[in-house]
Length: 65
Image 1 (cartoon, one colour):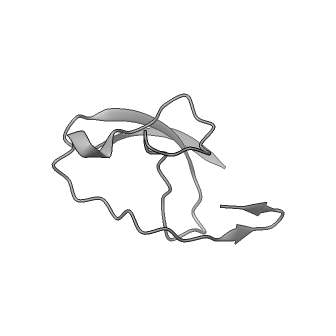
Image 2 (cartoon, helix red, strand yellow):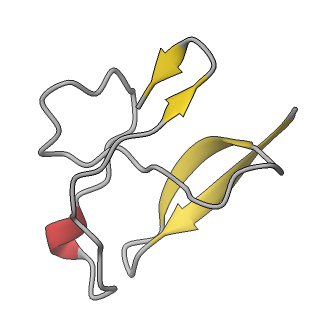
């Protein structure tokens, strides 16, 4: 497991992440998320960077996202 930080969008919001080298996508908690339990939420409406807001789900072992 690798831990680190990334900066998101034009606002350069710092988000701490767990880098999963076996995964092909990154989930970022948005400020409009009603079920997110995160200390940092990204306000995608303040970013000039396009955001895919399609709802989807995946299972990771015993966890569902």
